[in-house]
Image (tube, rainbow, N blue to C red; front, side):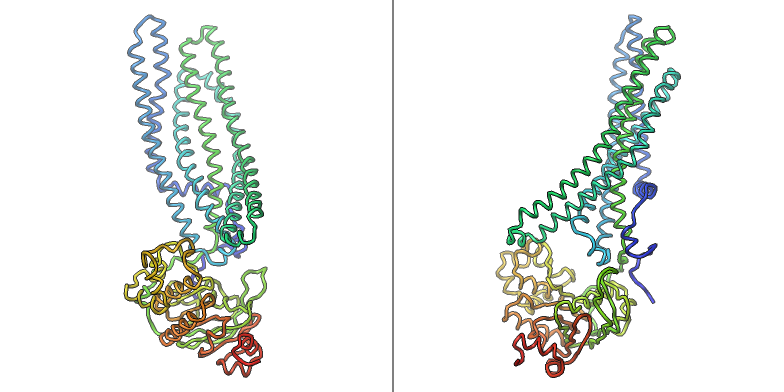
Amino acid sequence: MATDGDDPGDGSPARQRKASLGDRAAWRVLLDQVRPHRRTLLLGGLLSLAGSLAGLAMPLMAKQVIDAFGAGGTTTGPVLGLSAAVMAGALVAAAGRFLLERMGETIVLASRRTLVDRILRLRVPEVDRLSPGDLLSRVGSDTTLLRAVCTDALASLVGGAFTFLGAAVMMAVMDGLLLGVTLAVVALVAVMGVVIAPRIRRASLRAQEALGEMGSMLDRALQAFRTVKASGAEIRETAVVTAAATEARDRGVAAAGWTSLAGVGAWTSIQLAFLAVLGVGGARVASGEMEISALIAFLMYLFYLVSPIGQVIQSLTQMQNGLAAVTRIQEIALLPAEPVAAPAPMPTQAGGDPVGVTFTDVVFRYDEDRPIVHHGVTFEVPAGGMTALVGPSGAGKSTVFGLIERFYEADEGAIAIGGRDIRDWPLGELRSMLGYVEQDAPVLAGTLRENLVFGAPEATGEEIARALARTRLDDLVERLPEGLETPVGHRGVLLSGGERQRVAIARALLRRPRLLLLDEATSQLDAVNELRLREVVAEVARETTVLVIAHRLSTVTGADRIVVMEAGRVRAWGTHDELVAADALYRELAATQFLVAT
């Protein structure tokens, strides 16, 4: 049997959630990001080398100027040559850096595109465990760190490496002994860098995790902004976010401490190398073994040699930050995701006969450490007509819809759509024939038209007008200043609760579903609009299968079949009259809503 949607993995979801990258794996992922751009990297490196060679000519030309002064000759030629070398080196190095910067921006774009695609394809249980603020932090700040690695760090690393090699060759030609003294000091700094680098990465990772947690805390407050204000909780929520921000600051300071230590080491290496060369070289000049002009040229090369070391150390420090970012980005890639489905037929072409639904002994829980939600749920929804799910809160009604949409997978039992096991349906094809109206009826930022055609982008103007009329939204469109093109605000804040609910229903109807799922579709409607929507649902039920979850039994008294659920089990089914006569729970629910006499 096909298990469409499972990514290959190495264990349970719990182990996958804890998966992280080691140092080698993180480096491998980072190099994989750069590998497609290796030609650009090579060209940028060659330009950097050319710029370095022009710069490396400066100490020799300075030596010639000094010798010319000593000999009483003209210095015009050497000075002009020195100036030309400076200009040429600067232009060539700038071109190389631009190529590397552009490459870095391209890498970051690809990383963001891949990360967003992965996030939107994650399985619903994985997103349930994550927070929007943390996900935004990974797409935003973590990829920004990756950009710093691929631009500043990589550019400095490539340029510094070429400059170091060029300077080392020139110094070896001039005086091998002084070069040995210099490299001895550099080796000590390199050892220190190897020791510090892993600590920088760990500290940076903790700092970025704390930043993500701060984003989660702020997102929590913003998602319930009106509740925060109505509860007078501004000060408390500010304290919560501030505490998270303080933790991020503390971890950032720890990372900065290790970074500063690496910087101090680089600067110290420059000073120690300068003093060592000055001492040994001065002694050789005093003994006549070396010319003063050669010593000055060597000291200039020293800075060409040691300065790139500082660049390399700084670049490696940035790369440790980047490796921490790669780790957090790659954690998302290790989570189970749905497959990349082939484009489903557009709703205007996807119409078909209504389909039925069968649940057989379905057992389900949301996670291993959470209680069972469905205890052997069994019921049937005939093709065509309206079936309702009713029962107390927590009975497991909304979970039925999550299983039908394959947001979640049943632990035991079987679910069939149109007589076909739900796991045998390609995911894109399955969802293309479903229309789903969630309980909170989300509306996206954008225009009213964009919200209506969100699930049916090719819907015609005639189809939109019909959906508006059926959901009684045509009056709203006439009142809006720009009609269908009017922005509805973040999360549809400019619409009333009932209007958002009707927009969600119209959006589902435009998909021409073979199975329409309505979760509390009338909970925010007044009595007049509820009656009208009941008429719409009854009309739709003549064309397709409608499965409704309702707490207001008045919405479903005319349903062809009503399934009563309690505590994750199906206890009864039948028509309204049959259940009033035969089931005590349904009769109690009906009595509390004044649908039957007590």
